Image (cartoon, rainbow, N blue to C red):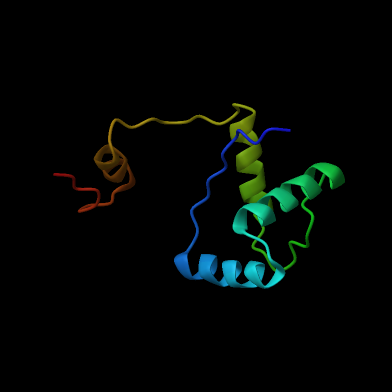
Length: 97
């Protein structure tokens, strides 16, 4: 199977360096690790590692996310970050030159 898709993720520089060091000790690259994780995700049909200790959304957050996904919650659009800041009552944010 030809590899034609690209996956990008932004992570902390120090975390990336630490991960690359561990992976290199096994002879793997970051790409190898990502491909292995995605293959296991597909095979197992679940995240292939424990999420224990990882912050999980609480019940209220999950309910809001579901309402948004189901278009049950009103949303508001803003023309600029400044308009959003004004609506939130935040001053001095988002100035652009």
